[in-house]
Amino acid sequence: MKLVAYSKNGKECLAVGEFRGGIFVGVDELKRPVRLKKVNIIFGDVEGEPYWEDIKELITENDIFSLWEIGEDMSLDEALDLLGKNSAEGKASLYFKIKETPYFKFLKGKLLRRSEDEVGSIKRKKEADAKYKSLRNDIDALLEGKSTSLLKAVLEIYNYGPRNDEIGKTLSKYPDFWNRFLDTGLVGPENIPFEIRLMMKSNDEEYYGYDFPYEDLTELNTFSIDDEDTEDIDDAISLHKDKLYIHIALPYSLVSRGCGADREALKRGSTLYLPDGKWHMYPLEVVRGLSLNEGEERMSLTLEVSLDDYLMMESYRFKVAKIINKKRLSYKNAESWLRSQGMWDKLLRICENLRNVRIKKGGVIVENFFLKVKYSSGIIEVSVYPPTDTGRIVSELMILYNSLAGRFISKKNLPGIFRIQEEGIKADVPTVDDPLYFPKIKALASPVKSSTRPGPHRLAGVDFYARASSPIRRYSDVLNQHQILAGLGYVDPLDEDTINKEMRTALSGENKRHKAQKYRNTFLILHKIRELGKVKGIAYDRKSVFLPDFLFMNAKSKAALDVGRFYTFKVEKVLFSSQKVLLSPLE
Image (cartoon, rainbow, N blue to C red; front, side):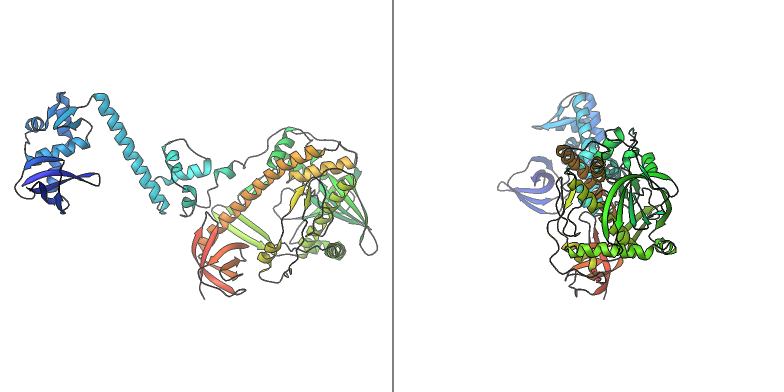
């Protein structure tokens, strides 16, 4: 019987058999019957079917190296004679081992010795190929959700940016790698994408402020209402006789236009709020110096509103003032303190009147549910706060401030950053006691655009709306504040080209940070949902589910549901890349 080598699908195999009429018939090393018109090489005669594994081990790499050290080309027979293994099996073993090692190339029955440089080059390539293959295997394992030694390096790239090394280059060759990697669940909640980390930096630029003439309102019984952990208190309120005062922090008192800190704040557009912390638009020292903290004198851009006997607005005026916040309140304790000061019912009545005026103009009252996500020491906390009367008071007064800011800027024929919504809600508006209020009101909202020229905000029910009530954390509010100050004669007004250019810069930065905040919140919410394994939800169509404990709407049920019904669901899968949850009802 003859021992031969043949090729199949690009791979050489051994076979044993006989030639019959020019056709080789036999069996190969994988025990497959073969019938071949062509073989690559005939090694010689053997007695019966050999032990295939033994053939491959007859000649070792050390044997090949010893032949190479002789320093000459040689035939197969000469090589085998030198090794003392000249047989058909030895020839087959040498043939395959030559191809596995870098020392010779086989051509027309001869072993052609490679130079030392050639051998070194081939070894390096083989090592690189083996390393690359191992790397690809590790990446494939990661994408199957298996933790490998590569995980740490990949997470470093996710957190701190691309690397121009073999790992980074190989990952770039994988289509949609990062989305696939996210969906494995191997990216834990402690990981924050590089693009977001780039925004997690303090503003350390220089600053200096303006000295404006002001009215002293420090005797007023001024108070603020904010979250308990708020560091940047933008607004405070006073009630005195027939006057309502809304005080807004005045950044120009510490940061003048054009200084380094101001230009950096413009680029940022807003403060970045993440569950892990906050990165302020202004330097931290500025934020602390502007925040309307309890017991500290602060400069403000104050709106003074005169009220009639029915607590309806008669007139208004803006002024620069010095104030002292006499009491810092939270949404939890504000009502009791305001009642003790005899202001609660009056504030409710003022805000009810303001709300009714907006409704008559076609405005829709949108009740605000607040979502707060925190991440600290490996623990994710998700809280949802329903609307409260205290929240409604603050919201109504901020709408008043911003609508009158827009009216004032417009009356002075100055450009500003106006929020315009030309189409109101024409469909039926859900009531706040509807369990599906949140997704329904979201679905009804129409787009809002920003313009340097005034226009109505139909949803709010106001003729003008220019945000100016949050200047510590939002730069577009600083620009509107500037125009109000210009209307009062404190500074030169900004022209339309300047407003338009800086509006685009500020809103771009603000939008970028808003997306980062939304992404991070949702990412942690998804981890919390995955951790819980079971969630409660309400069907808002046959397959779509609203999760009220997370204000989360991108959940889908595998089974058809009864619309409006509450269910308990098993969490089947969390898709981090598309920020979606797949559920199965348990009842």
